[in-house]
Image 1: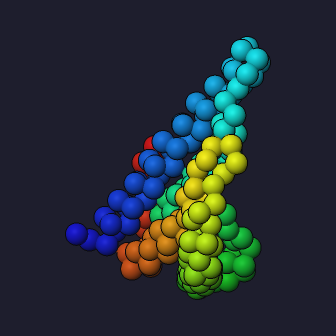
Image 2 (image 1 turned 135 degrees about the vertical axis):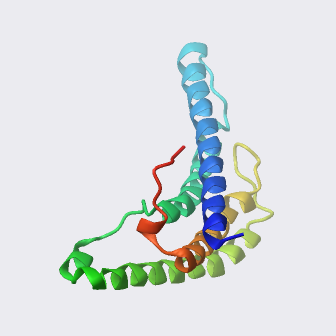
Amino acid sequence: MPVKNLSKGLALICQWSAAAIFVFVCGLNFSQVFGRYLMGSSIPWGEEIMRYSMIWVMMLGGTASIYYAEHMAVENIGELLAPHRRHLVLTATYIIGGLFCVLLVYYGWPAAMSNMKQTAAASGLSMFWVYFAIPMGALLMLVQIVLCAISGFASANAEPERL
């Protein structure tokens, strides 16, 4: 299986997972508003679960955005260079991003493990799952950066197909 297909598959899995979690968050938010304003009572754990779910959406969405080259970027430096040297800025950006992901995995995993026995106040959810989003998302982003580095960055991967 070519590396580009692996990269695309990882992006699609993360993209659809983030979309599914986001739909869940929207539904939970709707039920919160409905319950609070029309029924006089809302789900006590709803806001907490929505907040934690959005962390997962952000980390999974970051992985897909690397594949599609839709992450935030400062393009002024690249525009100062000659067109045939702009790839150097892009490469440096991905190296810095990859190093940051390594730091997130390195420090995020112990943080997740140390909070394994702690539970969220309203939902009773183990805080491990909340903290685990950071190292897991960073690891997925790091894998995506490596796959994109092998198969070619940005313009080679940016395709018109979306959700």
